Image 1 (spheres, helix red, strand yellow):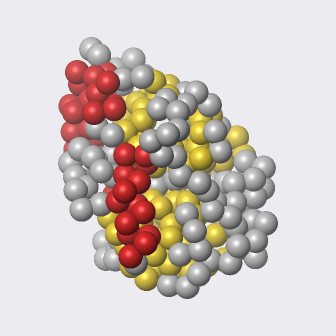
Image 2 (tube, rainbow, N blue to C red):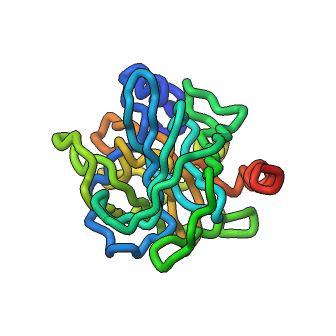
Length: 241
């Protein structure tokens, strides 16, 4: 069965199975400490589950980007962090969240959200924003990577103590483009706890880690919300709020 013909079905299966949120850096390795100063750990608090985590990334001193399915009642974000135990990391609460108004929690379309920080992030060597891709950039970059503090294997259901990273290769599928997402396929990629982190290609954030599912052949299809398709929405919120 082709990926394109069954993408909607895979998303439904993924949702009903309760495994829709991408999350663990599988097959990767520990990142060089503070080599990704834009990375953010988002601590989410909901009535059902007091504390959960997503990834995110810093856009400027006021805004962090993450996935809309990471929406919660309240948030704290951690900046400048390699290990959760780093003493010099910045911890800031979130003042306001902006999930995309057309986010669909069934098929995960428009899975993108902005978080406005309650106070400005302090830029240091370990805390810096990342540039965003736009329509003038490569439509299908070849060299990409993802990173996060999520689970590192299916057997280990705990956060990684240190930031992990892995390279991914994007695939050219029309069905992915129609859904405004990039896709990669294989046994290496993000997983539980890494949702909302950046797909980084050529030094820019091209996508937001969104969802993934296991295919019949055992490989995994990963989806990343395509940032270039949302630049007008992103720029509008950051300008007026």
